[in-house]
Length: 374
Ligand SMILES: Cc1ncc(COP(=O)(O)O)c(C=O)c1O
Image (cartoon, rainbow, N blue to C red):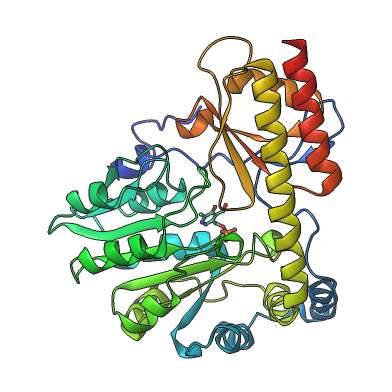
């Protein structure tokens, strides 16, 4: 019951129009979990060096963290060749997404994102009372021309995740640059590269764009390949005036001491990141092949979208025995948690994160059983 009595404090109308973010499941009622493949996490956990750094940092648990995340910004600057003063850390990249809208948009302004973009963009825009403008996609892929056609003098922020979640699709570097080049200077281009480390080939991670242009905010996270989702660490790079604006609205102690220490150690262990990347790409390919083979065998109506991150998106039949809802139920019954995307207006879609070899094989074998049972 969340209706407020007339004499109770009233939400702002734009907050009343929001829906809280619905996270992926972490458990299944009454059944042991075989594989948690719902939130695109690193199934191996953090680098052992990051775990040791967190353990060492626990003794400082009574002190506030470094409000400036100094060591972390310096480590990232050294890794990527950036100016540490132009890096901002956040409580996950979620906070940075919110900060961009808070500092640069408000009532009467417009914020654009692509249909099936990351769900937090809409929340960030609505939270500050801005109008949300949704650009049509092209078969789950961002359509730069459709997005540009919606830019108006009221546009303040454009959010683009590349690779995108939940679709897993990507646009090439040239398209990202074309989008940026055509945006008016007053628009902040938030390029969310949460899955950058999984991208292959011609890829624009936004750091060079943010280095050069005053209206680009390139953001990254430690929650995916670095395996530190629980520590809530994101970071972004932009021109100094953008960073100064974000500092005004961020929480002062936004990244915990354990998270800062873990991230510094994780950055130093790039070998671990390489191994996770190689595993993910290998087993992503394997799972895609398995599902496509099963689909042909059973004529199940499943399409696997071309993947660019650490998960697959399945578009399933609209009716019949193999809808996304049915596959989700069958997988849950087998102890496999994936992300059924009905809550994100994609009732035909199921997202499966790449797990360990055992988890990925378990997902494939559960799908094989479900399809065989018809
Ligand atoms: C595209 C994208 N951006 C940002 C985030 C937020 O991640 P975090 O707040 O854990 O850094 C996610 C998480 O799933 C994501 O998929």
